Length: 238
Image (cartoon, rainbow, N blue to C red; front, side, top):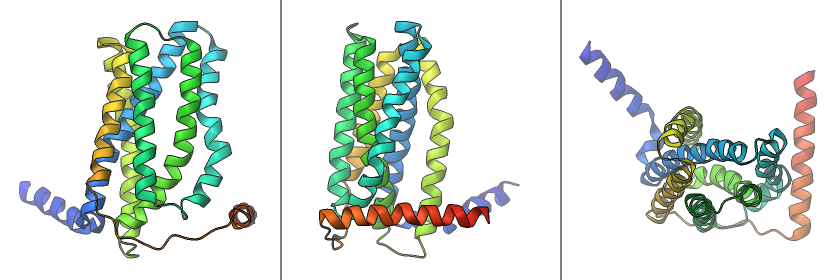
């Protein structure tokens, strides 16, 4: 039985072609901690908002402020992801996210936090995530040196980590909230960003030529992307 399990594990690891790339392994470790930290903070923010106000409306407003920047800015961020140096951009984005979590943690632990702080910081986090998500997803391609046979495995593994974090993060958040309070949940998220930032700084990424784009080209590509989505939605209903 043990031999069968060991053979199954070896076979699984052998099939994980993306893990042969050091940069991807570093990313996977950092991203695992970061995503778990993100879900810890998300649940803690919701809980703290309701504890402070008892208002369902303000609770919903906090969630809205985190999501609306993603809805508005993510399409533009996706276009610019091809133009910018994704490695450097991600380092800066993760640093900003760490600062946001640190500020939230400090004002919560000192007792200075109020609902307006949470709303403003939620809006800031939404703006950060609007650029972080498309940048991170496109960065996967560079981490495996744009090898087409490895890319599907890298994307699938990345999706698996994301979905596992949705299960693990809130579970840890519940334990932390009941034992040490919401402030330490935010500090834990800040620490998780420090881990992913360290993993990014340890990477050596091959330089690929950036896509040169004018402002008109960016808007044109955005319009083409929207048109592509429309066509595929229509095809899906046929």
